[in-house]
Amino acid sequence: MKKILITPLLMLVSICLFAQIKLVDNAIIKAKTEMTFPENFNPGRGGAPGDGGGFSMPRDMETTSTMYYTPNFMKVESASDFGNNIVITDRLNKKTTTLIEAMGRKTGFYSSDADEQAMKVKSDSLRELKKDSLKAMGLTFKESKPEITYVEETKKIAGYTCKKAIIKSKGQNGETNESVVWYNPEFKISPVSSAAGSTQGFGGGRGRMMMGGIQGLEELEGFPMEYEITRNNGFMIHMTVLKVQTDATIEEKIFEIPKGYDLKPMSSIQGGNGEGMRMIFRQ
Image: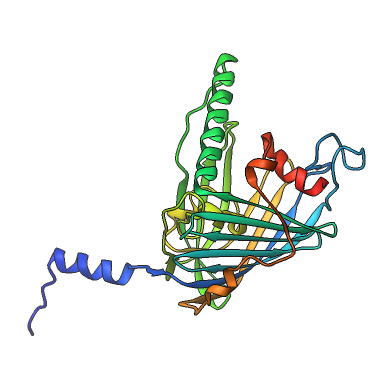
């Protein structure tokens, strides 16, 4: 009997072929997100809900979202009892439009890549100032990249066999956060470089509006299908993908800006600490 010899190089090529993840350029993703807010949570200015210092939100909220993704455009539609949001990113013209329908009003704002970059620079500057303040108080911590641990467990989600991963990251306060993520190892969303519409595996850029703010999602060896975030103050997010259409045919008219919204440039409503968003709801 002849022996078949497999060289290390051939083995490496075979492993790479089997392990290769499909990059998707066109996709429609439907998901459900359940959120629990801390007690006395009030996103408006002032103290507790009902004191006239902002608007009240329910303790628990469920949102359904649909994301349409192409190389040139991205659109995220979100609906909940609290209101409806639409975010449309036009990578060709480097522009992002955010539409908000709540409290009987249709408002929104638009921004350019330059606006997004300026916000990032400001945010980075504020973060550095905070670090300097903490250092002055003798409080320091080392920044570290998210740590991903892959677990040999599987789960069926939206018809796909998904694998489990645990992502650990450290917040600005030095607290280590741990999130369980179930991912589909068959594909990832193709990354696109743009300040306003960047996405890395659907976890970065505007994709975070649907997929949450977990650091390290873009590094997963596949597409995130379900995750849960919990914090010590009672805040919780649980996201589950309900349906995935890869290589979907998406007409460009789906990305057109609907009429009837009072649109303003982001620079005219932007304030510190998210004040711009609060202004929209107070109008």
